[in-house]
Length: 125
Image (cartoon, one colour):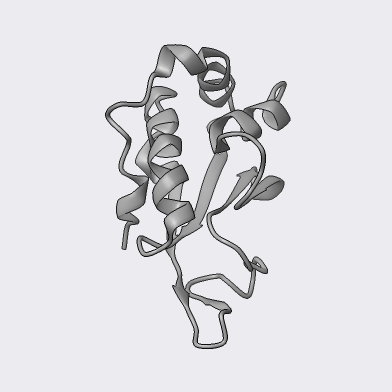
């Protein structure tokens, strides 16, 4: 199942984020983006469409983007695929793996857009 919130925002301005897009585009082909989110989640609806647009602008193929839809349990915890294995507490969470190893993780409320925050940490891979 895919996250609707990962559909690229058509109003996103790729030229304004050229450096971030270039870093994402230059990542090795073994890079996988694992995205936990919920279409019901206001933070996901705010952040993931722009991230989807950035991945699209960088030419990242769909098979390198894994969607993990998450629901909220009555106690407020998150439930869904791989939530326990990856210790997901907040959404959106994006885990970037290169050659099967986690190299960086974006969690919900960083101070920059997801693509920018990740690109700053992935520059040079």
